[in-house]
Image: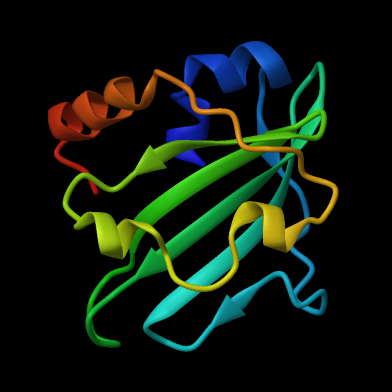
Length: 128
């Protein structure tokens, strides 16, 4: 949620404050096997609502989760706004469901140019 709240296009589209809604674990759109996780998180701001798609992984169960990729869907448009810079391209593809697979109503992904903002923000904060 911190990355989403720090992403200016999401703040403009959704409006502040951005809050997570209830995650429905029974939809089949959320998955966790202990080492990889895919979450579908309904989000809402003052202006609009959307869906945050999150992929995370870790090497073993004793490690903290690392966010691999984040997609945002607003008004039936979906785009990737974060890809972990410490992952290889193959890793960042997050095998399994894409945002479009997770919600068949999603339109073609729109690439956004603000990914560098997030990379530099994470590096500055020392967070992953």
